[in-house]
Image (cartoon, rainbow, N blue to C red; front, side, top):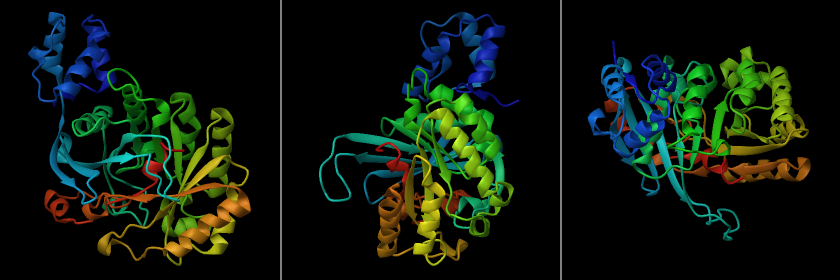
Length: 374
């Protein structure tokens, strides 16, 4: 049987309880591994002797490894290809380093400083099948364990201190709900100590899981990949929308907002001639005008021959944004482009094989950075 990740919180707590080892030693172990990912168990000081025995027989410091790293020409975006122990599968994670003092629009300085965001994966592949997403073309391969999710944060922390985590990488996070919740709870504890409000979970709209999310993870941000303002159009570009009708989805979001008292982030990819017309902007405004939301417009990132879509022109994006802001009073941002030259942009993650990963040249359109600045 394969050794588990030491960051699989449920597993290590169970083993320590069985061995009558104090659970207070677990954060100390995690802290040592975070600082020394290649460590041996015997190198960790001051543990009970029983802890060394349990660790050696049941766990590994890391069950994944960075297979390849690609740095974008923008000098602030890094994509990691991470090889998993289970089935030899691969996922990708993207680290984005940026200075919030540099305002993109208007060129005026604003409060802030250097920050790093990690875009994290929750599954190998994805079953949602969104037609504008490279990961969706892979189909579903497997869920990540909670430890494999947390290990992406460990790997990324060797590059830059991570302040924000967004679950916008490979997979539908709410389809791996138990592991997602356990991983985020680890991320908010020692040694990571991320604020829940610096963690964003993105979903295509898994209604039954949205209904549970605030109770299980209070304070964590919710982002919804809406991408169309009416059900028929949404089904055309997001086949999974048939299982989650727009009316029922909006009802669940209304309940979520009432209970959480938090704004909801709406992701809307701009597809030329499909969902980017003025009519669509008005439809979206009418759908959302009773909610407290931030709409993030995402210029489409090319994904080679995998899609029939093209990128909306800048002028149409600006007009779309203006309608939402001026006609409906909806806060609207345009995702910053980062990482397209290394296929690290939204919708471009698809590590089918090592060779295909190394050959891809596409960086990034990022609702991912907007979430920590609003």
